[in-house]
Image: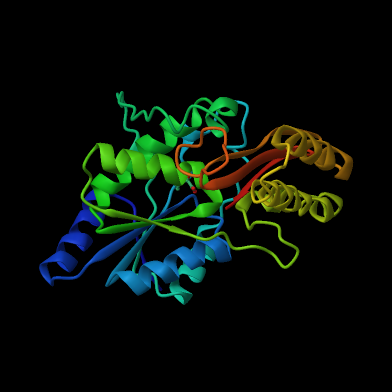
Length: 278
Ligand code: PAF
């Protein structure tokens, strides 16, 4: 079975011995509850680097008090078996105290790309992600790190912090894995009831509708986005946090000529789904 280490010292030792042999290393940061989307990241990492470390850490710093930290799905044995099957070389699964020991007082903040969308609805989220990702990069010292495009804004945040802090690694984004009906794979899909699961693909359909409008020069984008929101509510979503055409990299509101990325977040019962497409 693939080895699991729980301390940064043990992680460092494994990585140092690979480095001594001249091997390259990729990191795939996850919060566990793995699905095919995560396994795609590991497969891509295997392709690019000699050794792959997957971290499994449900990061408390990126959950607000009212969010789903305590009920976030956890099954380390299942995750380890899936990772073993795709050839992951090492799992790093630290306890919370290993990442945030008593007295921990530092936060990594990224401005600009965090200002809107997820940043507006989950104000704690990107500081929590940026802090843990910076720590994981420093602890694992990988040559490459792989992230899913499913969390498109997060990917831009990670690219920004890596560039701004001159962290010596390359960030790679991997396309979203979808179910046959278009629903983006996500660990949180496990929360959906059977009826909600039927409704869920409407989010991707709404993104598609907006994306098509960005390709039609005369479209009234304001109206299209209003229609998309109404469409989600009519389909059975409880509320829509945002669904919007953006500049793909700055995440400012989209203007004709910009590279387009459509991002959405909406509530289906008590589950918040996010998705995007370009
Ligand atoms: O995308 C995730 O699963 C998390 O936000 C990450 C990048 C592992 C940081 O906790």
